[in-house]
Length: 142
Image (cartoon, rainbow, N blue to C red; front, top):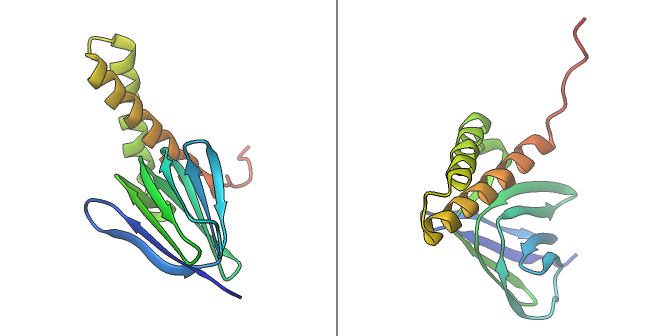
């Protein structure tokens, strides 16, 4: 089976690098499934969930804003945040979401600050979506 070389870069590090079977990217115009031999394209990425499929397993990452360069054999993702599910601190994310919501509600910020708060809110929501995906509560306690 042919694969894609997936590389996810953030300003701090290489967040992910591996040969994969498929990538689902939260592109600007909607989720984009990328398989080997995909038509070359460059797309803007919105904060959301990026899903990687390899060997029948899936890896979920919360990603921020950025761009993806897709060729027939490679996918390069450049984003300002990329966090695998297992590294997401749910409590810290909930606090960040509350701060962003408060900033937006109070609207004492200028346009640039409101936009930044909205992006922070979107990133936080993406992290919670990814983190809570695998959460399954135990049996109900009586």
